[in-house]
Length: 130
Image (tube, rainbow, N blue to C red; front, side, top):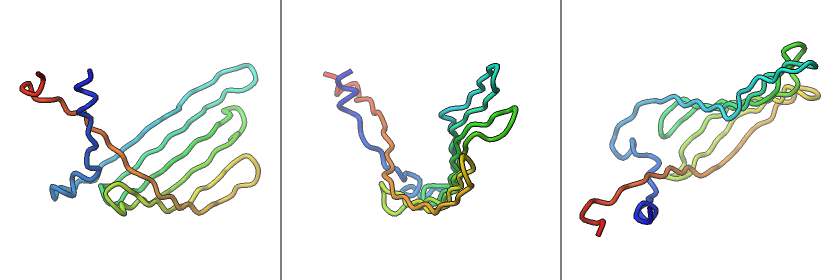
């Protein structure tokens, strides 16, 4: 276990660029997707995000909210973002966010700069396991 922990290395977040290989990819992630049934209301609750693109440019969509299946949207928001790699470990995101409920619908501009981390576990060669 100790050798596995000590051999944890930070992988290059842009391996396709270094190899000259580019192929767009699709990523979807549902952190929360559930149906809640009760005598008062049936709710659909979600927190979902995804992107399409490559190592340099991506289009993100992020959404979360609650939908009362008997009535209306309880609360929800949707973000549509363009993400651009500005350095090997940093992405800049620009886009818009729409708050649907509660209260009046509002639209916001979004600017975000965030680190990109990808870790890779590498196993030591048998000769290094002494």
